[in-house]
Image 1 (cartoon, helix red, strand yellow):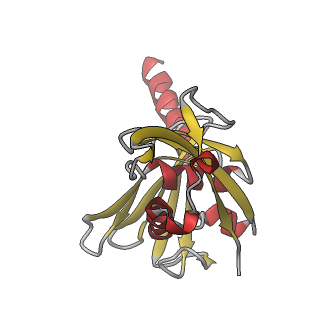
Image 2: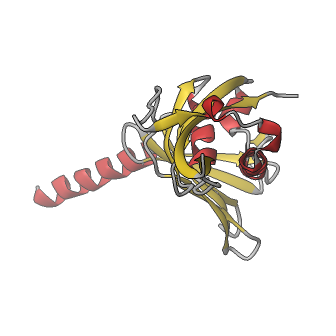
Length: 212
């Protein structure tokens, strides 16, 4: 009787684990064309009620192409891209808490109060270059045809450190998260000065997502 009970428990656990894992097959390495059986495989593992892991790999060799996690529809954790040899090629860090709302430290000066012309501000070029290098359109937003503009706020302190990051104008959770990730990886800019003294500056920038 005890042996039968153990077998039933093992079978029950097996059924649950299968139910928590879903496999899809694709014709191409970009995961765009789903087929009944193909050379590329996407395994979606349900970690808990909120988090799912997505592992995209070659069907025969099992070689990983990329690994991603989602918290609901929001990118989560450390995303990893692999090269042809199975080595880590690049990573994208989503280990942060998404923040909404305006927060201005008491000693921060609004950017326009500097009287600086944006055309001659070296930080603007650095910020735009950083966005261009790190910009990506979230796959889920592409699939849903989601567009929008997200406004990000942050401060540059007296030493040029970028801090106090939050979203002041939201669009969609996937777009919001992507903008936060982009700006969260920008750590240092040139400090601003007033009368020769370094000051903390509060700044906002818009990031627009448009499908063509």
